[in-house]
Length: 148
Image 1: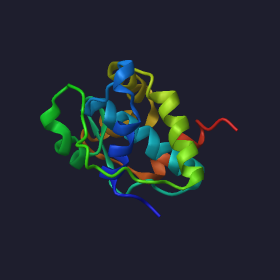
Image 2: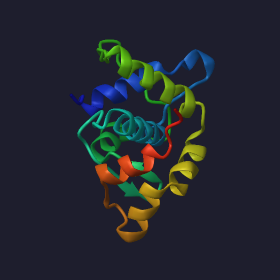
Image 3: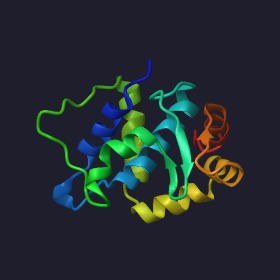
Image 4: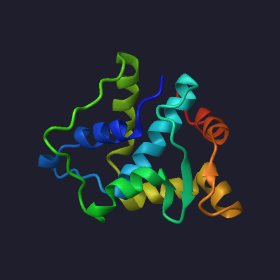
């Protein structure tokens, strides 16, 4: 079962600790969503959410999510108090926390540099800027990134 991408985005934003100086900008959110999707595909052979990534100039982007949060500009995305945070299964939540711990620590610029160096974005951006990054390409790449 996949989840609505907006609910996954809300979970990522809610997971950050603003009191510790952590913020999630729109571009950083895009990169975290990318790593979440990639590792969920690699580990579970299924999508965390159905929306596809496009290879934009600044890295992989879920267009609908980028547009949804664009009013925040490059600043921190905040959630309304009434936003309900989705519950994942216990296994999924463990992977979610691992991805957040590993990639949430990096700046937006560092995440952008990382995604630019990786096959899925690099291949599609150079062949077809703003082209879609396929499920198969994500699976192929992220399977090589899993540490048993």
